Image (cartoon, rainbow, N blue to C red; front, side, top):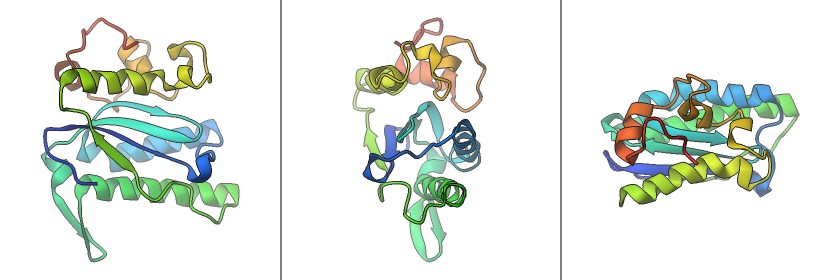
Length: 179
């Protein structure tokens, strides 16, 4: 995945064969903890949603995101390296816990540029938050704990998203709820 500084991307991946990647509430929390550790320092996270079999992020690539990192002889952008570390760390822990021997995620994480216009990025923002309702996990957006919706709705003060930047970049109304 090649990112351009200043662009907004919908980043997502899912379990191999559409299988679960989260098996318990603790797994979602571990993934978020690792997201704070690996991704947050290297991109501006605008929205996120973790689903039983996949995840979504809306990120703004900054100068740190596109810096070249050279680990184990491979040159990658820092965001790609950080995503690799996130998925590898999470997979190692969950595979041990679940007794798995095969990979948890699809080989390639997708990053689709949505910053061609603000409306496209805002649609991705809403799409990410609406995933739990669309897939009938819950009836109301506020009932799904594992997304940034609660932060934007004001019922939680999460620190993973840069809400001020999202409000500016996506032309969101500060008092509106992303539905």
